[in-house]
Amino acid sequence: MYSLPLTYFISLCEKVLNLLTGEDDFWEMVNTIYHLCIVSSCFFLCRFIYLVHKTSNNVVKIWPKQPKDKSVSTMIVIGSGGHTTEMLRLMRVMTPHLYCPRTYVMASSDKTSEFKVHVVEEHLATKASKKYRKYSIFKIPRSRDVGQSFITSFVSTVYSFLRCLPMMLYHRPELVLCNGPGTCIPICIIAFVLRTLFLSNTMIIFIESVCRVDSLSMTGKILYYFADVFLVQWPDLEQKYSRTAYVGRV
Image (cartoon, rainbow, N blue to C red; front, side):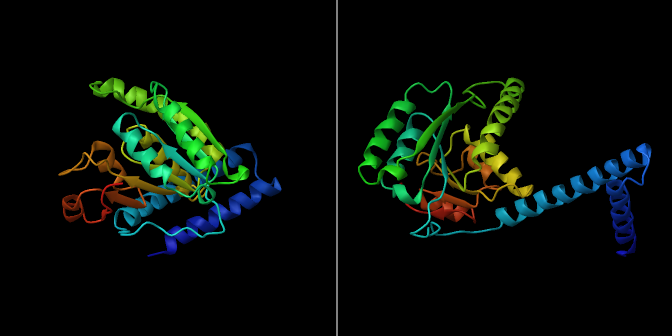
């Protein structure tokens, strides 16, 4: 049953070889490129589905241990209000030299979080040498505002994806840390796609907000299939959703 795909693959390899050696004419070259695109698209689609299946069935009950002699480039997605407070509380107790450089991402409409990030970094600077004090702040369009309609939300989400893509290609963080704001969806999906394309191997850690007691947030329901580690702050959520890990209040 594998003879047909194998024959097609061998034929395609021969065409690519002819393309590289210049033996094909123009239309044969176009035909080869077309088939190569089809095969590549099918391969990456299958890999994407495989990774989603693998990730959504992976249960990690503990925070991954970090080697003490290696720094991990970390991207922290900052929300607003309570999301910001929770995330920056977590950042205050993290070891700076293990998570460096740090890239903070927040919505362009967020007027207060940037100052709070600088305050936390000043605190971290007291615990690390100069070379581990590297951090930067990027602002991106918000994917969806509260009460925004579905149609306009789709447009703003696509725009947010396009704005995030160059940043993610440039930084390609080893770790993405987020806790619920819709701002993190473009970041996490792009990180997952880059992993599918073998362009990065970013680990995504999602921490559900403490205000979610009985059910996951909309962001949580989406990232349930993409986050490598899914942490919750209420035991009822761990019992209700099989791949979550209860860690208490962050």
